[in-house]
Amino acid sequence: MAEHSLLLDHHLAQTTMYPIGTEISHAKGIYIYDKQGNAFMDMVCGIGVSNWGHGNEAVNQAIKDQVDKHLHVMVYGEFLQEAQVNAARNLIALMPDPLDTCYFVNSGTEAIEAALKLAKRITGRTQLMAIEGSYHGNTHGSMSVSHNEHKKAAFRPLLPDVSFLPYHDEQALERITHRTACVLIETVQGDAGVRLHSPAYMQKLRARCTEMGAMLILDEIQCGLGRTGSLHAFEAKGIIPDILVLGKSLAGGLPVGCVVAAKEHMQLFTHNPMLGHISTFAGHPVVCAAVAANLDRYRERLAEAQVESKGKFITDYFASHSVIQGMRREGLMLAFDFPSIDHVNTILDRCMDRGFIAFRFLSRPMSIRWAPPLNITFEELNKACQLFDEACRY
Ligand SMILES: Cc1ncc(COP(=O)(O)O)c(C=O)c1O
Image (cartoon, rainbow, N blue to C red):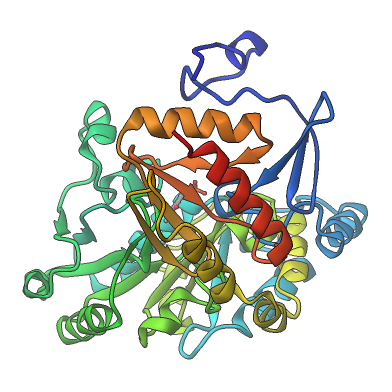
């Protein structure tokens, strides 16, 4: 892992002194190409974004068609724009009752901010609860409900009245009370290294929130829309949230976030105060055109993708590996545990040398993540496993 200032040298902010640094030429299918013509198998989908590979033709065409019609015309919520209507129709067609209204914003963290505000507005309460190990984004509000203190300390003070429930602790659900505005939870924890919640736990959480009148907000920004094998990760848990938050893969590669809730709740943003949540570029027509195209035939495409079988293929492949110390998986969302951070750094470098992109977790430094394209073939997956196995040899 070499220290360098490649982005800074180009007048671009950097987020680490160890960026991968590869200069990108183009991307197609499961491959990203550098300027020297090297192909890299993208096994993280830009961290859960290009879930159907790069350069999806239907999405690209929808973007081009919308560009020719119009770009931004007005702040969100004033004009009725066909692209937004189409995106909402296709998204709500995939939702269970009572989730019938969506608010498209520009990023995951913004959607979290909006969801927290909505929960406060619905309940008239202030206490925000989240789960130990959570990651919900990097703006002040989202950071407040994310757990990793090491990443937060430099930016305090953050939001007041935030508390964290211990991970997967049923007893602790008693701490949810009539004071609680919401419990925000990743249906599958991403940044914590793919930590799973059992259906039984999620059902008890759902029941306790209902009993106390607290909003249950599911963050499926990373784990939603097929990543775990079911359309929504919550389907496998046998619950329905009050508020669902999506992002990342929703627009097939354009910046997006989305809050989904019942109309009776979402309409609260219209009054007391009026313009209760606003954003200039929210529901951008080009993004919404991409969302609508991306969601077309989603259930059928997901069924064809055989996500669960592919996930099992990977864990079977590495079942008795001498260096991989553990694995966690839901669908095609995977974490591999290694003996040390040095192992992780060396293996990630070796992966790049072999034309293979894996990545690290923010809060689990001794693990490596995979989030391969859902439509990767078994042949490609086999090659990916071979390359990773080579990179993991000591
Ligand atoms: C579970 C989860 N929530 C929220 C976010 C924040 O999304 P964004 O980076 O688009 O702001 C992320 C991003 O990684 C995430 O994984």
